[in-house]
Image (cartoon, rainbow, N blue to C red):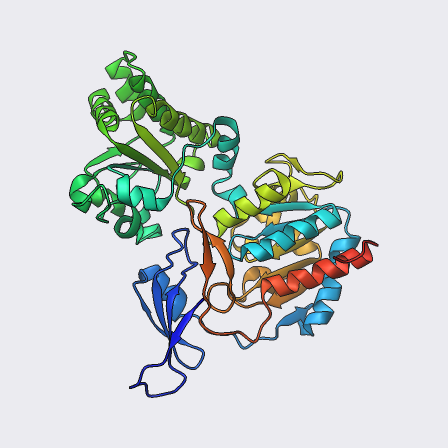
Length: 447
């Protein structure tokens, strides 16, 4: 439960302190934030990083109607009715987004996709989708971030820049914390960073490997060969990867000497040439290293609850993203059922976009088609996607206004402790209303 206390010297009785609040800006999902709230505004966010402070302190309730239908103010009930009819009457409806809302809302969104026989897809399909495919093909050797903080004496970041994308990652989980088996913190750890350019994170590395662009697979296969003691041609390795064989050998020797090795990887690996094959190579390298010592591998996830979206869609359908219910059962086929593709090929005839903004980042063909079909959008902020929506719901922000559950990037569920209420409905409330009405329109008795 949230802990709320009033300070004796507070200038207003409305000043409250929320202890152990959860930041949902990025996949670190830090749950040790102390918020000061006054008059429905957060005035201080202790222990939050620069991104977390911006997330909390810049949060304001937008003075907009809770629902717009074709740009005109309407009641939430009218919006739910229109949204349910759009989705129920479509032949190929799609549901997309989900990475910035609660698991409870995600669960309802998957149910709606099932009732309407459409697609359900998350933002994973345009970021760590290749990783999801690799997990199914190779498997994942994993751990919690708590284990990393207490045991990880060899930390590698591949294609990831946490100094800018996850500012508390180094200090809270991976490099700096003094753990149960690492009493000296950073001094007890070796850090290796692999990237195609020297990022801000590279300053924290003991060893920085700057590989050639689009050569991640070759570099990973080099390490796999060295892990198995195979002889390699030094000139060929350096020509292919841009890194001397002796440097790879030094890294492999350190990996074998580690007591608990950890590899974090980002979109610099998953979205370059090779995609899911790169992720498979890294997962296979992690598996290889467990012949010598304990090694684990985790993706550095970006959105606050994108890991929750993967978990919810997986336990509801058996697949993490890009799932089609058109035949009455779930089918998984990235490239065919993923949203950027169904829109770019002009296949979808209706859509529901939840807590994401494809109008700002999809291809031009996908954006043009989305604009041409009726669609529903749910978002706490006005975006290009909500502005063009047939039905747009202005919803409450999860973690700040709405309780629920989110998943940290290591698949650990974290409860949300909201700071104050919003006059707007939550995603869960809107989606639950849409599901009830969809079931009525489809002739299925509401649950």
